[in-house]
Each structure stands twice: as C-alpha cells, then as structure tokens.
Length: 257
View (tube, rainbow, N blue to C red):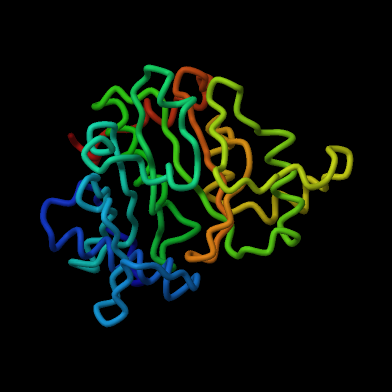
C-alpha cells in the first residue's frame, strides 16, 4: 500500500467496468491466494464470476490512490434479486426454510474480501458503515450468508467448529441447516479450547459474532473453493444497543440505494 493514508470511498458499482474491478479482486483473493476454483473462473482475464453477479448489488471500497482498482467488495442479494435468479446463492449449501418462512426482509451477504494491503486497518469498517446505510435504506431485518474457513480438513477445524456449535448456534426460528451435512459439534463442550478455537476463527466470522451473529446447523465442505463454510445469520431486532451502534454510526460515504 502507498505510504500516504488511504483515500477511501464506498459505493455500489455503477457500470460493468466497476463490476469487473470487483471480480478481479475476488480472483486475486479467492482463486490466486486461497486456491479456489469454479466454472466462472477466467484465469486469462483473472476474473472470478458467477451467474448471480447479474442479480446483486456490488458494494465496492476504493482507494483514491489506486484509481480503477477495487480494494474491498461485498456482494448483496435482496429477495427481489433472489427471485429473479431463482434462489439465494447459499441455497445450494443450506436449507433456508427458516428464514424464508419468517416473513421478514432478507439480505444475503457474499463474496466479502479485502485486498491484502488493506487488512487489519480501517478498510473493513468503511465497508461495514456503507453496508449499514444499505440495510437501513432497504429496511432489512435479517442478514445472512456463508462465511468460510480456509481448507477442507475437518479434523484440523474441530476446535473452532465445536465452539461455534456449542456457543453460537442460531435459535430454532433462524436455524438454517446444511444440505450436505457436516456436523460441527466434534468435541463435547468441556473439551473445547476456547483460546485455540478463537485463534482459528477468521476475523470476519469473529466480527459477525461480536455483532450478535449466530450460525446455522452444520458446516458445508466446499471442495471447489477449498473452504469449509458456515452460515451466519444476524437478526437486527436481536442486536443489543452497543451492537446497533454500527448502524447508528453509518453516514457519509454510504452505499446509497
């Protein structure tokens, strides 16, 4: 990253060129860095795409010092987009009947990533504040989406998956279930090493948990993307006042509508 402080701005993609910028960043993170694959990967153009890209809003973080280069992205799929696409993206992995039957406004979050130069700083907060504006503008009540552990070796993930299952399982009315079910309660509660588990849980998942996020029943092993996925659900009604502060702080530089 440049020596000067980043000049961040966040907006929804306005044209195909900006969507391509998001897809290039996704390629660098999910394919080049993490070893994923898939039918929509274009190695020659270094793009990671899929059919859902037509139906979503692409929320993009820019740094004015790197014009035309996306440095952070979120893919946002509302219910009208899911109807047009035929389903939510995560329905290939999880049965979403509990959420679909809730009668509440849903937003699926996906393909979240940051350029490696911008991790560990304020970049993610800029994206989250813009996401908060979007949630308010569209009166979203439940946010959800798959989040990933790198790798598909379940034995290596027995501590963090068990911690999630025992401490952060969604209440029954929000409890989605993995279709190709991989149990998460791999060790009993008294054998969970919380310190070790937290070290293995990716920062994004920990951030969702701090906001009151909960996980669905079972993990999904995604061999194509070389990940082990969990489905996170956040009910805005169940956030406490401190957690809702994220939304209250959202302001200038937000996502728009």
